[in-house]
Each structure stands twice: as C-alpha cells, then as structure tokens.
Length: 354
Image 1: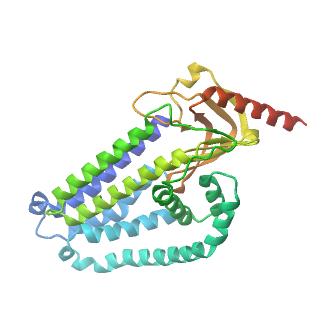
Image 2: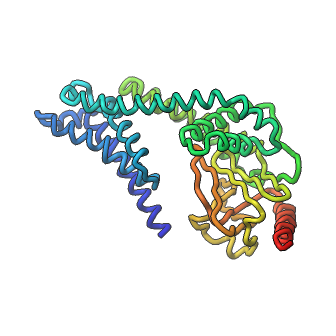
C-alpha cells in the first residue's frame, strides 16, 4: 500500500509537470506555434481546462490532500496562470473566464489580508508569550500561534515563513541553548556541509539559467530567479534552525526538530516502547514513522525507535500537520540519550501506576 501511494504521487507529479510544460511549449516555441491550427478556439479551451481543472486535480493527487476549498483556490490560480502562458491575443474570446479567476483570487486575497491584520494585532501578546516561555523558539512560537489561530492554515503557513526568514537573517550571532538535557543531531554527519554544497549549486544554477533565459523568456527567468533565491534563504534558515534547536529532554516530554523541515513534541506518557534492536533499526523505515536523522552521503540508521501508544501530530514544512505512529531518532551522543530517555520513561510509567 505504501509503495502504491508513493507511485501514484510520483505519477501525478510527472503528469502535472507534463501538462504545464506542454502548454507552455505550445505557445512559446517555434515548433508549438507551427503546430497551432487556424481556428485556435478549441486549442485555447483545451489549455484553459488543462490549467484550471486537470492541473489542480493532479496537484491534489500529488499532495494527497483533497478539499473543495483547496481545489477552488487551485482552479483560480490555474486561470491566472493561463493569462501568462497563453498569449493575450488568443484569449480575446475568453476574457470573462479569465476575470473569473482574478475575481476569486481577489476575494481570497481580501480574506487573507484580513487575517494578516488580525495577526499584526496579536503580534505583541504572541511575542510576549514566546519570550516568557522556556521552550525552544520553534515550539514556543508555534504554540503561541496555535492558541491564537488554531484553524487558520494561511496564518500557520505565513508564520512558518516568518520563522524561516528569522533564522536565515536574524540569528547569525546566536548560540545553541545548553540548558537542561540537550542533544545535537548533526555532528556525526556531514549534513550541514551537504546543505552548503546545495546552496553553492543553486547559486551557480541561478547565474547560469538567468543568463541563458533572460533574452528568450524574461518571465520564466524571473520566476526561476525568485524560486532559487527562496531556496537559498530556506537552506540558510534550515541550517541555523538545526544548529540552534538541539533535541531537548524535559521531565515529562521530548522536544525534537530537524531544522525547519519537521518538529515534534513527544510526551513520555504517550510512548509505548523503546526499540533498540539493531536488526529492526536497520530495516526500511515505514511511512508511518517520522525520521529525525541528519542524512548526508552515507547510509545511516536511527539510534532508537519510539513506538507510540497512538499516532501523534508532527509539524512539517510550511506548517503542514501529519500524525505518526513511530519516531526514529539519531543523536550525536546516543548512549547518554538512551539512558536519560529510559529513565524518564520508567518514571512516567511509575507515575501512571500511582
């Protein structure tokens, strides 16, 4: 079943890219223009349906996240994308359809601006709550946001982006916290070196692609430039978040994160067992398990596997929430980590019996 879901997701992504790229090539290459028939209305209608219906459905299949609200947003986005992909002279007969997408996006933007106003109004109490908390920033900030805006996905995504920019540009002089029992996750690997290599590769790719495309397609050149700059900012923020937020073991719970990509709060009362069997740890990790492992070029395995009594929610990239049944962890001091986790788990089990 896991393999089937991954295969469907991969096929959906491939088809999504194929739909978008084929429509772009159709109107922006000499081969595509020569292939266009004299009566373009049928072709334009097909492209509009591709971008406003087919592409959103494929995107939802790729993300494995289906909701009517999300689909409407993607449809409107597809209609707006059609205005940029299809030349304006071909859209003369379809202006009302195009403006429909703009209208929907306008309503959504107005709604999102109202949420931004609410967020700005609540920034002072949120920051006050964060500063007074003893938790790592990744957790204290998210907790404060969840209390104020428990079901506002847009706010959670925005705050996730705020954390990214904060760690990328506002933490250069900060040092990792050493309070309590903390464990780093990256020093036994070349994970940070690998991230820096990716940043260098993106910079080189950005310079090369921008130079190649700026004369042929300025729009595509600018879009790729923005995406690459965003990627660089993300990787810098991810490195800083990983460095400044070591795993922390408290009396009753574990706070663990792997940069900006994932984080999780695990209460010892929710842990069913600790698995240390090397044979089990070296097996392929199932889809129901979240990994907190700094990976580089070498194959590595977790130091222990926490099996939970019931699935617990983790926060992923862009504030996405997902529940997991097991947690795989690899730290730089595994012996001390295993010892303290066992002690705290035994204490939690004794307290439950009292």
